[in-house]
Length: 191
Image (cartoon, rainbow, N blue to C red; front, side, top):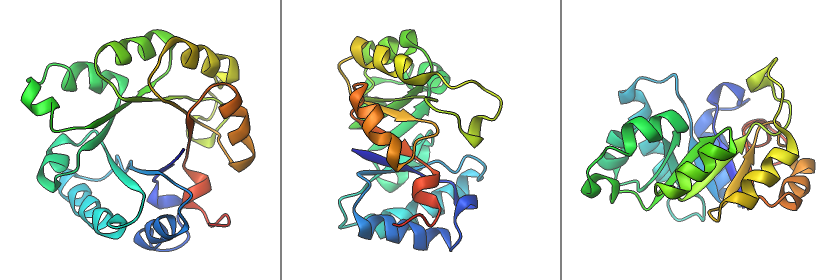
């Protein structure tokens, strides 16, 4: 299972054209719309456009942290950084939480992974596994960390950070359900 993580600044073509290619190619199972710099109104407009492009394709759209946009657009998949999951999502009343059938969380420790599983998360992004430009100067956690996370939880774990097409077999061997890639999907790399 593969997750395309967006970063419109990496695209060599109009962003929505890249999303169309991802939908048509069928290599990604999920598209995580992670455009954290956008104001909420612009993020909502982009989410709506992505939803339309992905409609009818096997690629499922996941929004990043913006529960208001998800509710407005009837998108039932959401992803959070660990702190936002803990401080914003968990205190919600049950009827708000039930709007989301898929809740993912980024984790950077085994303890966070176990906490997320115990508190209703459906999947984890564990990272960063390999060196990546997104985390320059920060040592990667490595495959041993990924294996430990996978061994301690039963929900799906996706590796993130420095993942390219050649490293996918390594993260699968460590027990991950799949991988999340940004550059591999956002740049023109054979999609």
